[in-house]
Length: 497
Image (cartoon, rainbow, N blue to C red; front, side, top):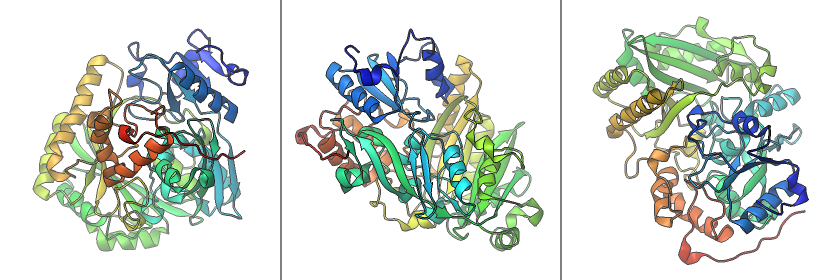
């Protein structure tokens, strides 16, 4: 870049800057993309004011430099800070971290650079009976998590992040500052589930808070392969998304330990242990659940519990950006439409024992998630899903391990094809996976491949919005919403001061 505006020159970090590497690596969660062969940005713009964002957009447009927008850095494929195009820079939004909670209005305004832990802590400082239905990892950045349809363990009661966003501020391709009123409902719809980075730079969201009890109930129980395993997992699939009350969310994680199949059930219940034990003994006797497995705590403390902190850890730990350690990983997603039959489960357990490292997580749907029409937001995966599946492997940094373990995840994913969605095989945007399609040539046709998997029938509307607000496709990455070239036209929008 040349001739940079004074408003932005003070926050630019070039590769020669002493703190460049530290700033870049501070926000990298998947260490697969922090090696010697990983493309590095020409510079980082550590924005903290609207003027920084405006200048970055206008300067990048003038000089033909690709922009990557980063808030938390937890994207699984690292495309917020790397690019196939060597002529790129990172707009780091970590400086937009302000949080203003209004309990009287039951709302909060949160900057995209804030972490979920910071948001939860700020809410709890004002109220012990309010929360927000977002993710369970405290170091995830608000920006990408919110706009892609982030979910958490209250999704069956309150839906997704995007179902609880009431306003947003963003800077468009012309440098205009917009809110919901000035951007219009089509664009607001698009950035609440369609990935904001395809349409502009999101600065903040206004969210509506939800009610939580003064004390919630959590548990974490483990079962081995020799403990009625097949019947246990099959029954879980039957009840987790439909029969159980929406106040109860139970995540199932399947893995292999010392060559033996294991299962972990971890839950959040917006109620007390007695109620929970009655529910599980009635609908899920296969779990052999006991009230002694329950722990009561505040909703804020339950976030720490889900992050595997010891019970009693001070809640200020949620403000620690190092509490979620970076690692090497490969992660993929699927949507389970009907329960896997028992014979299929037995084959699945054998396959997992064969791969050794690949794990499989079931996140149940139903409840409020299933009640919202699939066109209400760009996120279409609503009714008709038993669970969202996550395939994952984590490992140390050896190159041969990376190739081997990533392939193990892909093998497990391929094995599951008969049991999940088809035509297309759906995927979750926030579990970024370049295997499902990559727009290598910035083309409309390539964008349809992954776009249909992430957005289903909502893709057409997203393309229309994208073509209207960013006709030259400035805001693009390897899996952004494509522009329909035959409809490109210049538009102007009123802006807010």
